[in-house]
Image (cartoon, rainbow, N blue to C red; front, side):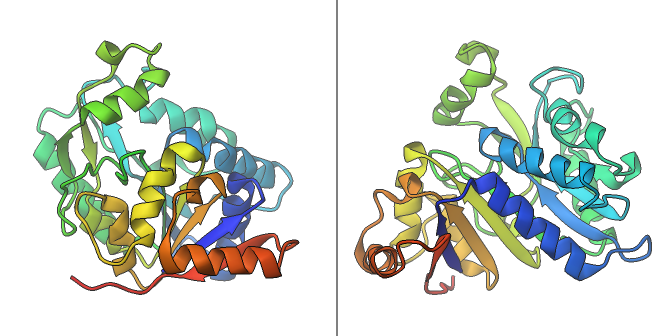
Length: 275
């Protein structure tokens, strides 16, 4: 996998990357481009730029199929903090994507394990995911795969950790008691089956997770490190998110920044790991 550190706005970088991927794929009704999509604060600018590309006729969503990473258990779909609401507000209601092409887990399903199994089936029926995008939790979680999640895990109900509940309380009037304690999430194994991964990490609160990624080896204590198992994974980060990185990766990054101070971004290859 590769670490890309940029001075650009992460959302603009990621949106431009996605636009070029879609154009190169040339999707049609018979051959749609399938994306895995995240929610959260890190990707607000990403969606803003996708909307801008659409309004400027630079991107067409008619032949795009999406699968979102996760959803809270128990929140109505019209709750302002549900991920159904988030996606409507940030993307779906602003572009020409057919509603039947969008997929989000139902956190109010009567049978949650069945809902998760059907979601996995829908991904397979779509031909798999071409590009899975995601953010990074402060504790290194990806989607709602908390520390300790198996790297071969599939879509399932999960309990959220106290750290994640605290981090997400900013979306619930800073009241941890308002934050759902459970969610449905795609598994790490589900994510790793995508053809390509692009994850975003911004700010000093993500520096600990990025530092763990830059160390040799894999650790279920930091789900982000699972990205090193994938042959086509990218972590896009800003300098603040890389502040705690050490060892050879830090040395390579510093050398690139020193030798190419005006570059829009710097790329460091991380050694591929194996289970």
